[in-house]
Length: 194
Image (cartoon, rainbow, N blue to C red; front, top):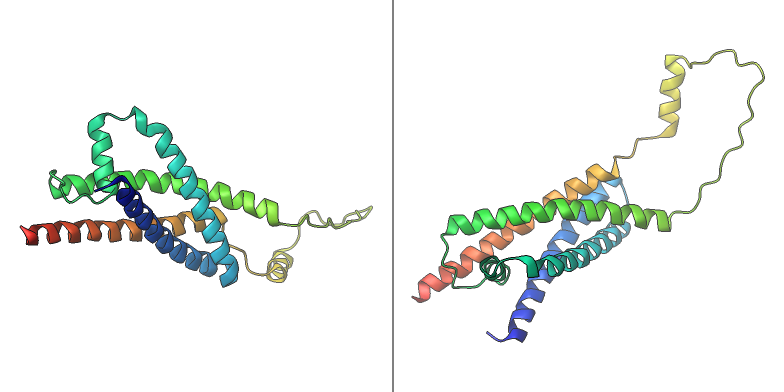
């Protein structure tokens, strides 16, 4: 296969993975953070493109330090080479270990990216001028007053970090399963041709 064919195959695989992850993560952001669908898709798209760009930069910066055998294995795994000589179980274990590493890196990168994005897009909040009464009668509020204050504040929004971890886990798990199914499909197709 020519170099252009390999790059096209890799690009198509990356686009498939991005479509899967953006769809799942935007759905989780919409459900958990109660954002609009448009905002969820925008945040999901930006965070995934940011994580993908950083991931490829990290991969290309550490790839020259791998041994030739590991480089060939990574190329065959990432391009779904039909001539995989290793047993299926070893391929799947390697695949899952690589994906767990990618999951942890993605979760960290996406959380940092979403935090930066929120800081860039959020407007500074106005501070409320509070006058301090000269003689406070109670330091602590009563239990009923605390409940009323919580009800007036509205529902508590879930933690963004937990939402990003959940969304990344679900999208990476789905993408990993789809890629394993694709590898097995190509392997079965190669066996049938023999």
